Structure formats: C-alpha cells, structure tokens
Image 1 (cartoon, protein in one colour):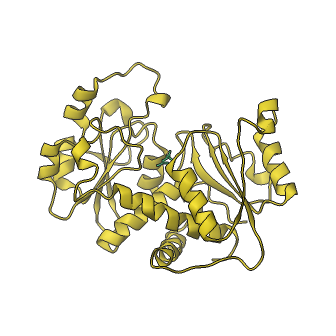
Image 2 (cartoon, protein in one colour):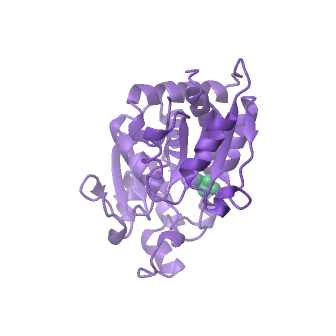
Image 3 (tube, rainbow, N blue to C red):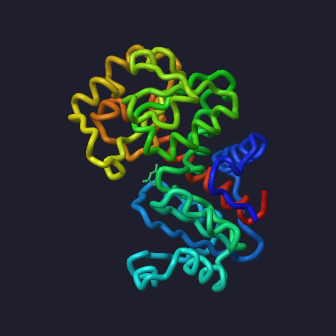
Length: 294
Ligand code: CP
C-alpha cells in the first residue's frame, strides 16, 4: 500500500522518482489507469489550493471523484474518521485524500485500513504534497539541492509546511536555516541555524515565507501587522538585498503586507504561482504512485 502521510515515508530516491514523474507531467506527459479508479477527497479543514489542485490532478488522470462534504455526510451524525474511510473503502474507493485539523490523525488508521491514504495536511504536523511541489519548484530553478541555502521564515511552530520541508530539504543536501520570532521556532532551533531577517535575505538562495496561522495561535503573542512586517517580513528593502538569482516561495494563502510585501507576491523573484501550478503535476505523480503505477 503506497500511503503518503509524511515525508518520512519517502527515501531521497523515491522523492526523485516522484519529482521526475511530476516534471514529465509538467512537460505534457499523459497517463490514465487501465481500469476505472475511484478517489475520495475528505477535507475537514479549509483549503483552496490543495483541494482544487488534487481535483484537477484527478481529472487529468481520468480518475472518478467521489464527492465528500463533511457538512452533509454522516460525520455530522458522529461517525468516526475510521468508519468513514472504511465505508468508502467498502463502497469501492481506491485512494483517499485527507486534510484534518488533528496532528497525525492517520496514526491509528494506518494499521487498520488497506486503502492508501494521501495526507493533504494534518494540523501542525506534515504537508507532504506541498513539500514535493516546493521541491519541484526549487529543482526547476537550481537543478539540484546540494548546498542551497534555504531559509524558512515566520510562523514555523504552527507550520506543517516547515516541518515537511526542513526534514526533506536537509535529507536532499540543502542547508536549512530558520528566521522569525524566536518564540515561534520551537522544535526547530535545536536542528537549524537561526538568522535575522536581514541576514536571511542576504544569504538565501530560497526565501521560503510562511503565513502567520492566526487560527492556531492562542492569542498570547500579538504583533501589529506593520510591526511584524518591519521586524520579520520580507520587505521591499530586504528583497533588494537578495542575491541576483534567489527566489521567493510561499505556500499561500498569503497575508499580503504582513509576512511579505504586497508588491513582492508577484515580483520577478516570486515563484508563488509557479508553486501552485506545480502542485497539480506533483499530485498527479503522488496519485499514480498510490495506484501502484510508479
Ligand atoms: N498551501 C495550501 O495548503 O493551501 P490551501 O490551504 O489553500 O490548500
């Protein structure tokens, strides 16, 4: 069973196979399964990019979508996540894609289910397909990851994107750095070097900006938007200090004018919309893997 719940599920060789397959899809390759395959997308947290890029990927692969709506499903009657997936499996789903607010929601499910699970984000845990699309975007730019300086900036503590990317980029040979409010670095400071935002802008090949996840904060740390932007944001002045070929990533949604200046979101260095485009190709590759076709 080819689950993808965490980047820890993948060796660097497997990552490269997925990136090559995603790049082939980006270059126009097409593939559809020999027999009809059914996929259910279960989103228990809001999403625009992940949800719709999975849907586009599924449609491009000719997969049959089982539409799931938490509000009108039997989850509303108290049915558990396990019983929901077991039901979909019995009905004939071949793969489930799940986003859920609970960290590691999948831990208790994996030993009991046979259907492959693709994690579309768990709480503050992991976001493996976001990491893969970030890797594809970086690889398209720099060819490989060896000794690239990647600085992950901002609200790392609440970020599944930061966790997945720091782990996988380190395995692939990049130098991972962190920047942002010190109190948001928990769990990262022991493993990665800390840079001020000014140092980060000057050193980075890749500035990976993160959204402040207000919905996961307990309300104790509060910055005004403009204070945050001045101290920890990617300002226009800091962008001017960046190296000639450095790029800017952000998983989005973006708080424009807070973690990144409004005018930088679509600037020449920004690959933010390229990341979204790559999301479709990466998810095609991940779905194909889940169907045991790569
Ligand atoms: N980057 C990302 O996961 O965006 P969504 O929450 O819109 O899916």
